[in-house]
Image 1 (tube, rainbow, N blue to C red):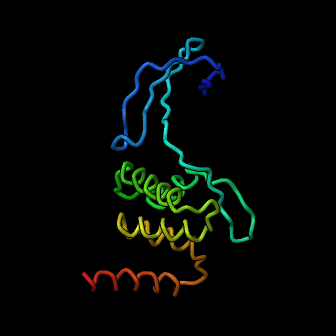
Image 2: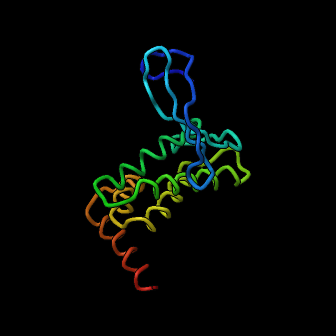
Length: 154
């Protein structure tokens, strides 16, 4: 693993432990050249996924991009980061185990919407506004109506 500080390719693992209920290995590393310390995470990747964008362009699935988009939705909300990490891992597992090599970005968006709906209503609305490309206030009203509808069912 390359050192993020000095780019040395010779780093040493000082500590390893399971994380995310054993789905991830967390490794604490140190660089013998500059003394920099950093953490890496090792995950199982069942297969390489390709995302088909709305434009038809194909890009490699990027777990970090998915994580960033969910973190943006929950920014300044009282949401445990571990919940977001678990949701991202769950979405990735669903995609990898679907049997499909190519995934439509819309399918990923729906999975994110479902996850955020159970985590935080405000984050759900924030993500929906981008995912559904809101153009006017009525769009927000419609999504809030969906949330109220879900509460009526409980």
